[in-house]
Every structure is written in structure tokens, then in C-alpha cells.
Image (tube, rainbow, N blue to C red):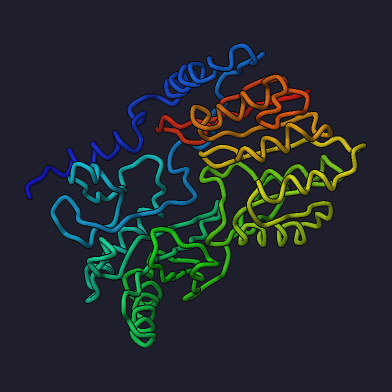
Length: 385
């Protein structure tokens, strides 16, 4: 296959970071216009739309990057990078991403040396599960102090425990004594996974060497981060713990158990005693949690759902809890399912949908840019009643 490396890299940059040619000021203008179109649906509810709040770090801001393993533009199946093309069109290639403006140099360095490791390994990568092979994706996490955690996923296929152990030793030696030592990893994890995505509960992360966690200093707190925990990729804050000093009590609900363990450790380490965290699905936990609260206590709710938005039962629980007078909604995809959430929070009571409580009023919306060079933008909305 003939290809022009520079053209391929430019194409990947246009896919992953399509705004990279614009100045940051111009990027914010583009994002504001996009957010303005999104909230037009809420025009009858929204009182104030603010300008986009920018981020202080524009380049190399990601604290977590996940790199795929597949055939590169030259056909080599042991290429580490980002996908370009589509599976539908059958033109997928894996392209190195050191040129992308949102990727830190450290992440690119670890990806580069993982590729070196793969190309000298006698074990093949796993491109498609049913075709065999073993080595899979790489995730790199870093903090502001430069500490680096690498997590490598491996499909065991039919290997024995002895054979698996040999591969783990080879990987560890490469990053501690071999060429990969230049990456100066703080910790290296190995996960055996037969699925596209696998949690720590489904298949534990195995620490091959180093520290089990990395830490971030943020808003006066020392935050512990596990390999499986969600932490905003542009270090912006931990919502529950950062609000603890402003409230008599903080109740947090999080799906990932490792993240809850991290939150509990962080609270204890920092002497925060008024926080309580629950692991599980919000739609299962929140309704019962709200019912257990005393009616005379006023509640400020803060929600930060995934792209799918809030589950309908969560919207019902918030809407029907009279103690909640203020709601802050952090949306990473306001033009998707979250738009339905916004409307159901503000619409007149609807017994068919079990939305019986007083409707909220959407006071303000603030676009917050956490992803320079990309079209993505968070939208923070303030509701009161």
C-alpha cells in the first residue's frame, strides 16, 4: 500500500481535532454559535446564555488517552494510534497521533514504545476477537506532576496461566529494564479481557509494577485516581468533594466502584467528614436516597451524566423531590438525549410521565470548553424553582 505520511496525519488531525487550524479565540466563537443553536430548542425556558468559558491549557491537555492497535497505513498490524476511516467502508487504518494538539508528549511517547514492544514481540496483536491474537489497546493516564500510569489490555484466548505469566514478565521487563524504561512509568497495569470494554469487577487490573494509584492536587484536595475511575480528561475538578465545604452534607452516586473507593479515600485523607458515597446505578439508588432525606432540608442537586443523559427515573426522582430547589446540570452532549431531560425538568406536571413536582425554571446556561481543537463543549445549566 502506498501512502503519503504527511497527508494521512493531516487527515487524522482533521477528524480528531477539526478546529486545530483556528486560533483559540476563533475556536471559542465557533463553539458559542454551536451552543446557541443547540439551546434554541430551550428558548421558551432559558433566561440567560453566557459566552463560552475557555480553558487555561489549550495544547496537550488530555490526562487520559486510549490508543488502539491495528494495521497502519503501511499495512503493519502492530501499529499503535488512533483509527482513521470507517469499518463500514472497510478503510480503517491505525495512525500514530504524536502530531495531535490535544495529546501530551508523554502519552505519545508511551504509545510509541508500546509499538516498539509489539514489533519485537513474538505474540500477535488481537485485531478481531474471532481471528485470535492477544495484544490490544493501551491507556495512558498522567497527572500534573508528570506521573504516568499505563494500562495494557490483553486477550488471553487459550493461553495457560504459565504462558500469560511469561507475557507479563516480558512486558514488565521492557518498561523497567528495556527500551521502554525511558518512559519512566509510575505504574504499569495488565488486564486480561475477552470483551471490548471490561471493568475491574469483570476482570481485575493486575499491577505489574509501581504505585497502584496516581494523585492529583486540585482545589486544595489531594485526589486519588484508580485505573478504572472516571476523571475528566481536562483536569477540571471533582464535583462532590469540592462542594463539601459549602454544604452540611454531600451525597454522591457513582457507577464505577473504584471511583467510589477513590472518593472515600480522598475524603478521609483530606479530613472531609460530611461526604457519603454510593456505588451503583443512579436510577436504582437516587430515588430511595432522596426519600430518606428529611423534608426540611433544602437540597442542591448536581448531575453530570454520560452522553446518554439522565435515566428517566432519575429525572422523575429530582422533579418529584420538593426539597430540591436548585439543580446544576453538567451536560457533555446537550444536543442529544439530555435535551429531553431539560424539557422534562421544566415542563408542566405530567401524570402520565410521573412528573408530578413543581417545574424548574432554567435560569442560566454556561458553555465550558474542556476540549480545545475539537468541536465538543460542555454545557452547564442552572435550574431553580
